[in-house]
Image (cartoon, rainbow, N blue to C red; front, top):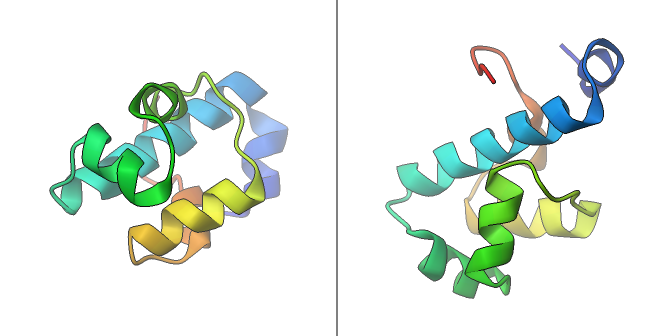
Length: 85
């Protein structure tokens, strides 16, 4: 389903929670903790924690920076199929 579908059926808070879960999932798949990943992408670990918990909005620049570091396409972060809140 498209990003627009999720934006229409859920509120902003839930959208960012799902996005944070996807980021956490891919980060853990790489075996990185928040400190190492934060250093890799130039984001303080506390800020990364807020992103992964859905408490922070992301810019597209940050989304692409995260996806690049994870060796995935940015669109993969928005594939919420099989991802629950």
